[in-house]
Length: 264
Image 1 (tube, helix red, strand yellow):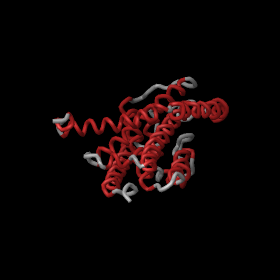
Image 2: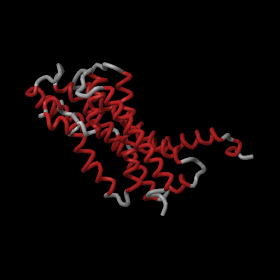
Image 3: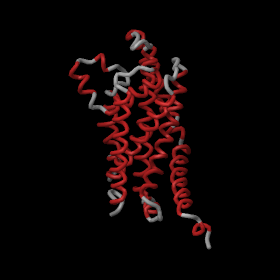
Image 4: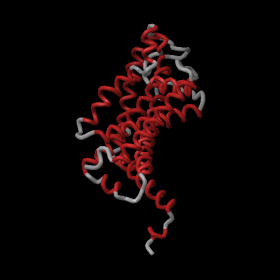
């Protein structure tokens, strides 16, 4: 009897899931100069330009210096973009090179494939978030108000955008398709999600319009975890984030099971 045949179903599923996660993590760690280091450099430029040059002219926001106020938003922005980019590039690359077929024919359920790719995206998002946080500490002081809220928001947000990246990759038919969503949807929503300002500064109409931006809830929930201030109720923020995670997870799982973008 072979070693594989001697394994229980749970052991086989555990090995399969661990293999996918290992592949995803090792993929972006091999090219850390392209995946981990650039966000730190980009955020350092944000801190220099907005923090040192523009911040003193803006003054304090909610009792914090401008640099302290924007730091949580910049960290969250890096988590969002890297979690999304990891899954969309990895899955589409597997489709393009046609080695996704090796995973599809393996005797493992689609939910494990989904969890494996999403976990890889979450790991990269959290790791980049830690690197950017270390960069932020070189420019300003940060004191965590609630570790539980901070960690929960980071993991949920990375999960949500890993799922979004997977959906984009499934529907994409060429390389240009994986850049449309980040360019025309993700980037505008991120910059208009309260990263650089409080929505209290906006006129009433634009405040209400901003409430339709899901990234606003993630940025504010994370800012509350870090600084203890938020434009949005924390309960409402977690409800919105959790709801989006559940909807995207179920939708992604259905796409995988129906073979959308995978089977010709």
